[in-house]
Amino acid sequence: MNTDLIFKKAVNLHLSKKLSEAEELYKKILKINPNNLIASNNLASIYNYKKNHEKAKNLLEYVLKIKPSDTDALNNYGNALKGLNRFEEALLYYKKSLELKPDFIDAINNMGNCLTSIGRLDEAIKSFKKALSINSNHINSNWNLSLLQLLVGDFEEGWKNYEWRKKRKTTKNKYIQNLNKEWDGRASLKNKKIYIYKEQGLGDYIQFSRYLFSIKKLGAHIILDTPTSLKKLIKSLEIKFEFIDELKDQSFDFYCSIMSLPFAFKTNFETIPNKTPYFFVEKNKEILWKQKIKNNTKKIGLCWSGNSKNLTVFNRNIPLKKLVPLFELPFSFHSLQIEIEENEKKIFNRHKNFFNHKKEIMGFDNTAALINNLDLVITVDTSIAHLAGALGKKVWIMLPFIPDFRWLLKIDWSPWYPSARLLRQTKFNDWDEIITLIQKDLKKV
Image (cartoon, rainbow, N blue to C red):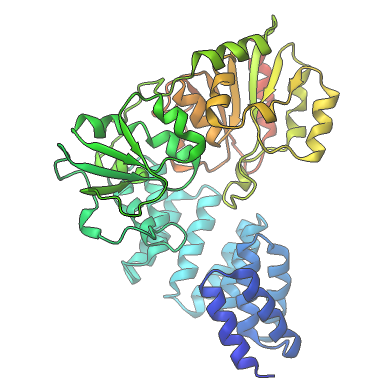
């Protein structure tokens, strides 16, 4: 069996992001030759990407036993330890890798990410800038630097560098070819057609759809490919749009990602368009929910986890069992979750003041109608936080130790959503302090 050919095929699959197929071929190679260190490293990187960090760690320990000076393995091992939340140990392995190869840009970038995770943000920024001093066009370092710049409130540099995401394999635009038509805020849009295309998650779309008012004021004809679940809410903006499902033969003068609108409008802390509500609910749906949940108690909406398919939200989620103490309070609690796990259904059954509306809140317009009948929404950082904020509803948002850039640092309020209160972890992955605070403050409601 020609393992060289198999390896070449595995690498091509790996580069094409066909990870499961590449994984099987790497395993096949290692069955024949367990000492193929490159195949081991590549397989470990797939394990890390899939959050199978323990598997990656075990495989890399074997590699490093054979070759302790393998810089790729040291870097990958750091990634595995970081994935297991063993941050200080991970830093040691990135440093070992860099002692052997000082210009190893991936290790410098990964060290920056690790430093970010433990809140050493100044050092993280220095790491990304060091990587860029070696290669100013390093995509991930520019991208990671932008996220930190936005997080610390450096909007001018942050929005500019945030544009580097378009060159990343996971987020780059795959279907607009004419780069000359990209709108960056400078060209006049009066009587011009502009295609604002969707990008990233539903929460992102909700947050940045506020800029459609600004686009309209410039006299543009707006074309949107709005996600289906958001179309009814986008229509409530009462701005004339042209909806499309795909480009096909659609013509336009300019295009712009919805995520690039803050950059195009040169948004800074003072100029964030934060007038809410900007989404509105059909009256008949609102009335139906009012009748459905009618009682004399305060009504609180709960959302404790985001999309399970999104690999980036794992540290934002809270196990539902941690919220159980809240159900001892004299309120009615209403789930705003679509995804309900089997073990979570038992919690609904045990608490008669906790209601599961899964089947009735499909589509954000239905969820919005329920939210408009609640006194308060308590949620992790997911699309529900943005929806409640866009509706102008009182919302408490539970944030991880290092939050997403849009929530900034230290403040307990949001410049994007005036009705939001931000509740922040003070220790990594420790939700108990926040839940205790919520219990205490709910007693005052």
